[in-house]
Image 1 (cartoon, rainbow, N blue to C red):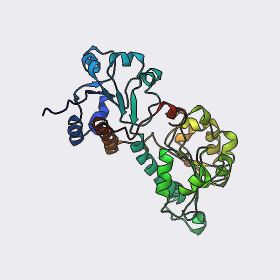
Image 2 (cartoon, rainbow, N blue to C red):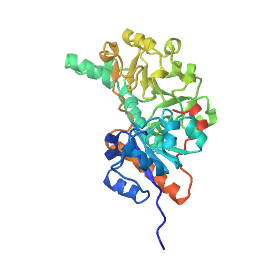
Image 3 (cartoon, helix red, strand yellow):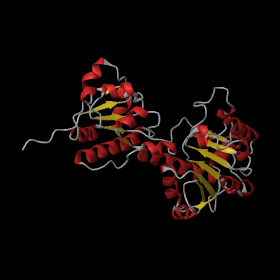
Image 4 (cartoon, rainbow, N blue to C red):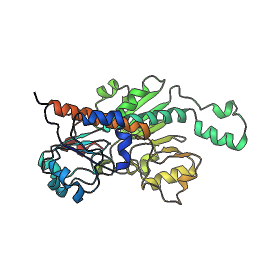
Length: 337
């Protein structure tokens, strides 16, 4: 019997990401599942060199750097049936034309949540040990701290407030379970019973801010969450509290946050900011109570292979006739990243 015809697929992303997303063994597995040219990576849907491949494409494998899938892009790919995104959010990628065409959309956002949650866990534990403050003091004094300087140090019973039971938030809650921490959660879509099942106590946003030693943001960037931590809410965080943001910078009023950090009342671990990057003159680059990183919590380096593997598994499911395991629905975009 002749083997079944493989679906036609095309890569659409910045080609710099392709070798890490699909290293050779994974690329071979992909090519056993789809008819795809590894040498063709589309960055412009109007490129004549890509016209033939797009005209027959049934699947687009997208990633960072993929152009917006507007009506023009869909016109170039009339047979398109599925978009498999080898990255996180699809919010900026897909538009009304794609949903109206009924194209299935899947995202590797679940895989991208893993390193973000791991990074956040590391920061929670380091912050609880005052590691960054002790490092700064040790640099200045070359002296070991005395009992008075470590009296407030430690993770036993430390109160960690998680804002948002997103994929990252839920993964973080899972990772926090083995530690002797008190975990609080705010998410308007999660009941107290569900929060308890996740290992956390459900609180209002204001009460979470009042009662947490460490506040970690994992909410989506949607109109309802823009500047959700404004000046008044930041003022609720206790003196000496720490804000960790690995979600989106726009969740925080950065002018208000900068004032709190410059005063020294709060500390922060910021992997994302608003704007991103911060202006060259921002004081946050130099404050000893700010640990600032260039958006590294998400998948980097060898972690990208996890995203590629999710895409290959999704494609295998589609070919077998099974529904996507990580499908994104139009209605989801109202409350997810």
